[in-house]
Length: 293
Image (tube, rainbow, N blue to C red; front, side, top):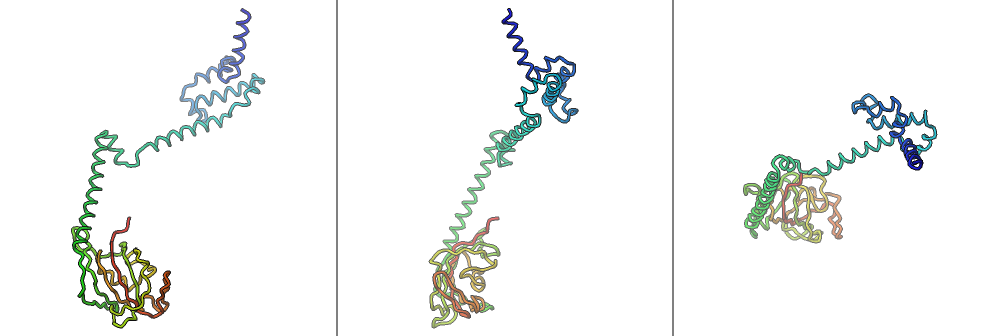
């Protein structure tokens, strides 16, 4: 009997070291009121939850009535740390829920509103858009190939600026509704460009003489009617490209004033255009496309 009583006494002393156990052990009206405090008390107790106020009251009770018990609980976390930890856990749960949501707002709405059928319907709309765009691109490529024609007897055209050009191949590039597609400001033009000095025996486009550069046969891409112009591109060449379509090839004579001016130009391949020299280009436009928004 004495052994059982001793065990119960030890359990009561151990329970007294815990905040809620200490409140029950003290059995004071203030302690019992803190335990029975309704949830609405959080608004009148400094914005803290009920368990936090109970913890704070337990600490004060230990400090006033049980000095030794307070010393034993020095290793427990502070009230501020417990509140901060609870706030961090709530923030992590909210973030995890946000990450689980779909990035497609329309798909999320349809799925929640109409179930899996709504999601499948939206997938069908997207698939139709992709397929129709692919069919449109294939049609444009087909019209471009069938509309491209090599020419050998084209006449030389002279512009008011002094630029002259002669078509070697007529391009067949088309745009919407199958209409001819010419470059517009900001379009991306990709093609091959070769440069010669206009020091040959003929004149105009027939004056092609000393070879300067062809970018090693690689494609050159640039934005039409945008500055600055780089590499072999010049204002005179751009004036001749303005009336070309994808698939076309043209020889262009450009006077020095619209080419490299009095400064000339040096190319990575070692070719040099002296200052004040006229040049002859051959440009083949492979694609004219709208830049991504």
